[in-house]
Figure (tube, rainbow, N blue to C red):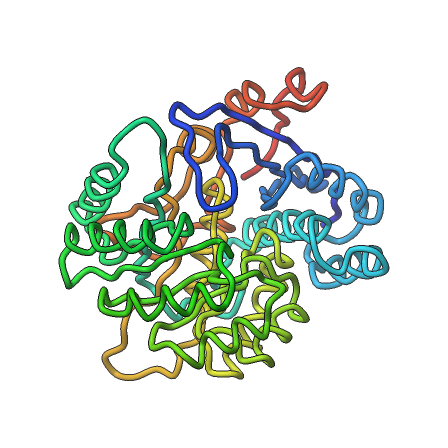
Length: 389
């Protein structure tokens, strides 16, 4: 079944309450989506993680090599895109464009074959997933400690068994907020921290030693993603598991991360690191090093659903009769483009996700809202095609 149309859409929406982390502030959500349509009208949706306008340009660049090609041959198409970009984009935003297209191709494949993506990846090995809540960002104009503790308690009341909070303001401030959140959620709920590479190795090690008493499940992106030696030294000197990888691309980036013994938990972003096709390879590589894989996920239900199918297919590490449930990231911050633009086929009940059994990713996009939020010139005048979902 041949590809006849590849349409990128950049959508943007201002946030009601801006928030920030250790690097910069968000006052809006801006995301690049892509719709791939086949000759029989079947369509699939994908999403890229990163600068939306640049990803859109990347999709438009790759489009010329994919039109009239067979959609089911997704590895052949992936290789074509990779080879066309290898000389000047072995990592970065063009890989996010490849990722968006690849995710859409998996969605199309599932619809054509009437199977969920997780089954096509090899089978549903983890039918129940226990996501952790990502939130606890910084905001201005209020008592931040009170805000963080109330938000953490909200996630606990919603059934989440783990929460990840932002740190990276300063060691003193971080410890103050960590202590408050741990007290608010109690000893049973897991707590992870994410510095978004705010610290030097020396600073991160000091922070590790001082926060070990708070039973931190992992310390995410403690140092620069370029500092492989810093990651390795830190990991060897703390009891807290070290996580990272959202800034890595392709299996080659994760090979460097793993060879240098940088992390206990590898965190590829499916919508940036090469799509589901490459994420499957990254998972195999990480599992050969006996590392856990917990994908980074930030976007609409397209990105989140891709992560759900990916985690549903992950191998156990190492596996036992009574195993812990697999986990994944579930962003709970304000995101109108997630909550109103896209729909999903699974529900979140008591902090658990059941692997969806609907064909493809099990997601769709409300085209009226798409055109309302679209920044594309000309997109708002497009009519919804007669397509088969």
